[in-house]
Every structure is written in C-alpha cells, then in structure tokens.
Image (tube, rainbow, N blue to C red; front, top):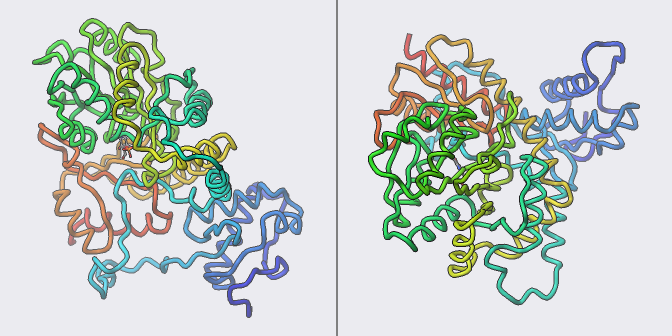
Length: 472
Ligand SMILES: Cc1ncc(COP(=O)(O)O)c(C=O)c1O
C-alpha cells in the first residue's frame, strides 16, 4: 500500500461481507476495518471513503457504514474530521505492556495523561457538521446591536422547552425557561433570589454531593446544611429530624451525584409534601438524565403534582460540553417570578451568539442526534468497565445505571495513594473522598469515561487494576 494519507479507494479496502452470517453487517464492517488498521494496512491519517460512496460500493445501506465508523471512533481507531472526512486516528500502541515496562520516560506532567476526571463528556459535537452550520447561521445573523434578553433569547427558551418535551417528557411553557450560564450560574441566581428575604439563606445539600455546588452556593452567601445520603439520595424520613428548616434543598433525584442511584417515587412525594408544608424551595439538579443505560429515568420531581415549588436545573455541560457554559432553569410559581426578577436585575452572562447557535442546533435535530451517538459511545465504554472490573471481588461498582461516570469502592489501597500512583503512570482519577462534606468518606474512586476513547479507557483500567492488586 503506497497511500500515505490521501483518501483510500474502496477497491483498496479489503472488506468482504457475508450476508448469511449471524454477525450484523455493521459488526462485520467494523471488525474488518479494525483488523486492517491493526495490521497496518490502514495507517494513521489515511482518509476513508465518504460513507455514502463506501456504502454504495459495498451494496449496503449508508447507516451500516455510519454505525461502523461511529463504533470505531468510539474505540479510538477512527477520527471524524467533519467535511475533511473520516481518518484513521493516530492511536497509542494497543499492545498492553507489563506495568514495570510502562514507566514513562518523560515526566508524567509532560506526557499525555489519560484523564478520567468525571463531568467531561465526549468531545465529538465540536467535530459535528451540524454544530458548525448552527454556528455559521448564528454568526450570519444581522442587526444584533443590543444586549441579549436577561432571561435568554426567546428562540432558545422555546428550543429548550421543545427539547425537554422530547427528551424528558416534560411539558414546559417557554416563558418558564430561564437561560443560564450552566448550573453554577443557576445556583448563584437562586441564592441571590433567596437573599432578597434572608441574608444567609439556608440550603440543605446531599452528603456526598456535588462539591462545586457547595462551593458556589457558600461563596454566594448561602448557609449550607448537609444530610447524609446513600446512593438512592435523600429519604423523606430524614427531613423530619433536621436541626433547622432550610430555605431550599438541592437534590439529584435522577442520578444521585456521585453515587448514582435514584430517588424512589415515594421519597420524591415525601420530599414534596414536606417542602410544601414548610415553604422550602426544591432545587432539582437534573444534570444527566438523558444518559440512561439500563432503566428509564423516573419523571422529574418538577413534573409531579405538589404544593411545593420546584426549580429544575438543566445544563448543556453533560449532553454537549462544559466549555459552552450554558444551561437553563425551569421555574414556576412565586419563586419563578422572583427568579426572573433577580435575573432581570442582574442581567444575563450568556452570550447572544451562543444562544442563537444552540437554538439552531437543537431545532435542526443536531442535539438529539448527538445525544443518541454519545449514549451509544458511553454504553460501550460502560460495558468495557464492567467487563474489566465487574468480576473483581475486591471491588464494588456503583453508579452504573446512567451518566458518564462510575464509582468503584474498595478496601485497600487508600484511594488517595492510588490516585497519586496512577497519575505517575499517566492516569488521572478522582478519589470519592472529595465529594463528602461532613461525613467520613468511603474509600473509592469516581471514574469519568465520557471524554476518553475505548483504547485509553482500557489502558487506564489496566493501570488501575494493577495498582489495586498491589505488588505481588
Ligand atoms: C451534579 C452536577 N450537576 C451539574 C453539573 C453541571 O454544572 P455546570 O452546568 O455548571 O457545568 C455537573 C457537572 O459536572 C454535575 O456534576
């Protein structure tokens, strides 16, 4: 093969399909392309034929080729280059070397680190053609010489309402949507609104929980109170024993963060009843409910009938990227009016051009398609995690139902030591301890698998597995 980077003709691609085989055509195409890459027949930087042409030449539907390309992209073998086509990725050597031989020759800070920090989603939307055309449409709009509306552009508020109807089964009026610069901004807004009534409003948070939320709300002037929870979140019986009745309670009912269970329906109803009785505002952080791998998500607390006021906090950080700093609130009732007034007073931190691009992307179906692709990618990596770690008796795997991270718990070694050693070997993982506020933490790690390729994940899991085993 002499081709050193230009598009390959399909005649050069050694694909033979067996239509009688029980193996799907997608799996056959993916497997033969994978073998061609592993054998060196297809080299890094080679451009593959366009999916339409490739499919036509093989006499199969384009969807089969697209799915095979997506699978191999998820595994780190291919890289989509937007209009530039799909290329063979420059990938690390997949031969797994024994740990002793893997000591990096350069300092690990300089070497490439496989980053398993949670909260980092797949980077693929930025390579997406639909994403780029949404931005092109946004920057081509003329005549915007004014500030964007404080509550968000009407177009994006409508797009969010429609998206929530499809993705979450939520019936939301666009006028009840406030565009935010993500959850952190939304929480500052909530605290600012509550400070209109009390200088240091009390907010109850789950322990363990989302450390950034704790930091942001405390910095904004809230007085935090924690309640110990297990993976299924807050129990309504705990509310009766609280020291002080808070002004608001922040919960992650769809996917307790970080432990990963979900709040049972009777607990949700109990929470709403208590909140209604005491005038407590419920803040529902619905950060990743689009990514369910097993069970369907339960309906949002915000959709349940109640006397209590609920604010739903949504973000584009997980289903698109935290780089955008964009999210939304769904509000109602008196607290909704006060939140809107607070936002009007403070003005919006969200750029109009970003709101416009997002609205085009959502309305064109780009976001839904991206979520479908990302969900497939995450499901694949999640199964890799289960395959590699699930059978180890010394480990307990949790938070597997959905999202972009899992939690692994173990007795030995100490998670902080393990994380330090893993970093020396080029793998960044975050100990579970950092998620706890007032209680003794459990020993374990939170592993984000959103932003790595399958190959990187496999390599990182080898390192972690060997560190957990310790010297023999
Ligand atoms: C529990 C939780 N909520 C919300 C978010 C999103 O925050 P933001 O929208 O500020 O990026 C994250 C991100 O990691 C999270 O872990």
